[in-house]
Image 1 (cartoon, rainbow, N blue to C red):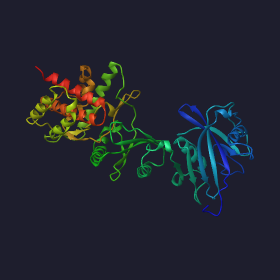
Image 2: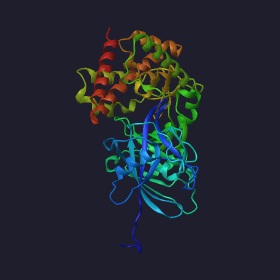
Image 3: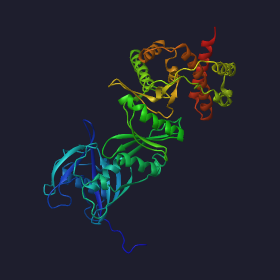
Image 4: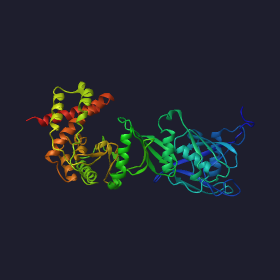
Length: 460
């Protein structure tokens, strides 16, 4: 024992009674009153064990009935989170928080000498003032933590104050790897305030990492770590220069850290179009909006003089990885296409998204709104670059191709058509090589399908 005094903290029990409200889950809170600690502050129904023979679940059931009149079956009590708390005066205690979603009776104030109000509150709009200890337990519960420490310092307010929030979540073994590193968490919280929940939403095919972050005061953001400096700088530049002109159709950059290769972005609505199913008329409407969004990206700055932007230098490297999966005649077709590309007339250069495909496009059905994410491959290039990965989605559906072109406002020029073919071949080969190296059969198959389609189109 290293200290002179053993810990002999009392044990508190706290009821997190949850019901479904009109706008989402709601929690039951009571307002303390009279000659009690933290009078005037909102708190959970709570209390102490009544003697050495009462267990903590029995104490919760008893306190719930005494304070609010509800009857709880102990079989409906679920463990939520344990918080080791120290008050500003220095007194420490253990708080065990329990979730209950079923009970008998209607909650109402029963101990008027200790409480003067009781009500249901959305987790997104918790009342002020609230006891900081109680708020710590609720925030830890919402974050999915099993255990937390909330040691306040002398002089800290009893009521929750975001500027002196002392909550520290103790990581769960099962959650290893599902939250960012400490430096990234600190960077994100410096930008948007304390984050109570992290959800890893990284795309399986990419090496960049992405988390959805929920704030203690409400709000949602995305925190992204790029796999290399090039992608980081591309996305940051695009979010600062290109994305603002797209308005609500693109996320807003909240903060960026080049050393961490990290960004914090506002959340956009909708659901990914990758794998989604819509009626034909709705599909045409969506693809018309896709064409409009592509035009907005390409017109975000004036076009630049024509330049040779075809990445022909990568052909041999991609071919080496793709050869085992190519069909007879594919290699000759790829090399012939690359040779012809050298004589193509360059087309003007515009801002491009660089990875304009269904998985980076989100559709909000209720609002009829389209959103685009993931600008880490954004760079200037031929406008048709942004239609290469999209073209697989309209193959066999001339109505969808027409909808895109109508939304875009024009068809491709002959020079753009030629560039489009070359870029499609190069993308197919790189997709096969990447899919082979990363065990992604869908990418391999998509690349093979693209080559077969282009070869068929080239035949007399």
